Amino acid sequence: MGDINREPDTIELAEPPRFRYGERVICRSTVRNDGTFPGKDVGHVLVQKGDVGYVRSIGTFLQQYFIYSVEWVERGYQVGMRAKELCTLDELPPEVLEKFADRLELLQRIGKGDNVVVRSEAEMARDAEAA
Image (cartoon, rainbow, N blue to C red):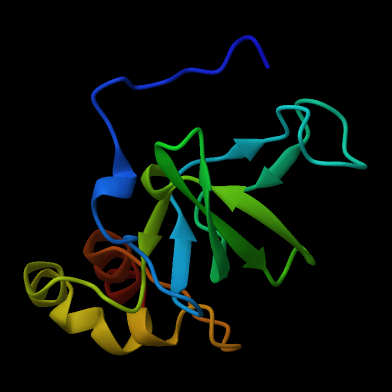
């Protein structure tokens, strides 16, 4: 634990938690086992970028950070995550909703049991040209 990377200017606990219990979140980057996840080798990929999960509990670490225990349903386990590793799917700000207005229904269905594929405008245009 000697290699803990603290951010001295960041004290998340001074504000309310960014996510709430049961909130649907998506992983922003690939997360590997740093040795704190039992039963998996160090370096094993625990969560892939784009995986969808649900916040199950909220704890703290080093009296500085919130740690969100996220249940990754498709993987079958929970992993402690920092806020910077997650993005909400339930509480998107208006400017994001506006940006994805044409795909809003798909965004709302991600992680809710539907097989949803969100494609870029370029991919949709290629498919339309090929048809």
